[in-house]
Length: 167
Image (cartoon, rainbow, N blue to C red):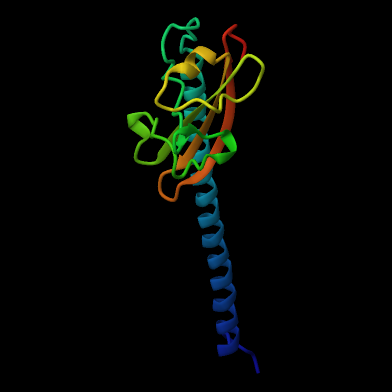
């Protein structure tokens, strides 16, 4: 007797194997799209970081007693005194420095910490006085790039500006 066709079990096994192959292909496609999305997000975050760094580098560091040097970033305070870098929570503290085009997807935070010529953090100066400007010899600006949706920190980088122009 010659067999002409497939049995029911062979058809079910063939359909099952095809379903596994198709599901694996769709899963790989979904994973690939997620990786591409994260790579694009990180590329934009890196460009925003570079833009912010260049923006800070272009701020003129004026001579002592000239002005209040307010453009470097936010000066977060706790009560009546300034916060130190380790006391900052970028998800809560600071203003949004994001360029308008990226405001829907990202948050750029800049925090300005000032240091005296001897390297000490300028701590005992009230946030409502301008005395710290006269004491500042070095700025440390911490830049954070956050995802707006969940405030996840994508990038963080401290940069430094000194009166003699070194970074």
